[in-house]
Length: 252
Image 1 (tube, rainbow, N blue to C red):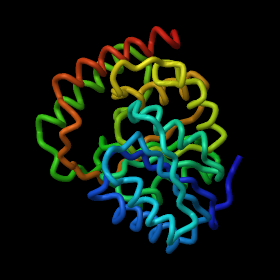
Image 2 (image 1 turned 90 degrees about the vertical axis):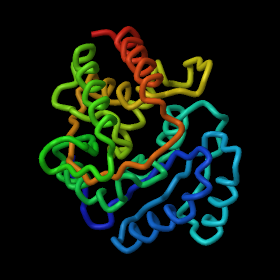
Image 3 (image 1 turned 135 degrees about the horizontal axis):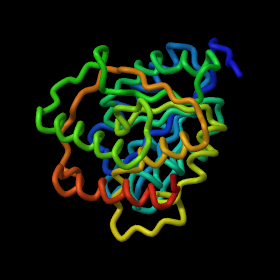
């Protein structure tokens, strides 16, 4: 089913956890861009129990823009936080984008035509391929990302998806509601001893493939931002463990 390009309705879900230093400026960037492009849109900030003044800063934006709303969740990690936002989306398409805008909101224009054409149910940003641009990424991080991708493909049949982890993914909303509602490892029924959800994107994409949804990877420009939340060695082990859990949970 094709969609009308002009002023297509889009819900943008931005998960946050202690993003006070950047959230106001980045929210303004998202709202200003979507407004300038003439989209019918809403921005859903889904907060993961921030302990700084992230929510206060989001509320200051809400006071200026009624297209922005805030969901406040208990601290469970990125997976359940994104899921809460996606399931609350009401526009025909839903994009979830990392709060740091490592993938600029303008890259939406590369993804959207794949959905409006009716050829695909999801378009996902990819940092792989000759047309992709990586800015300021340390070589070791790139190498570890490639190793993780190879590991995923050894455990799960992921087709031509070479980058599962880029935090910029667009779905038809009815598809997203179906897929996110079927999460097991990172769903509402999952029990987390710590709020780690590193392979969350893998489970989302694997369910979409099992449901025979059509997914198009799209090369984008992406900028590396340093974070203390990710430990390459520690989290690589946990992500590999969770990929096995995803296979056991969904079979095939």
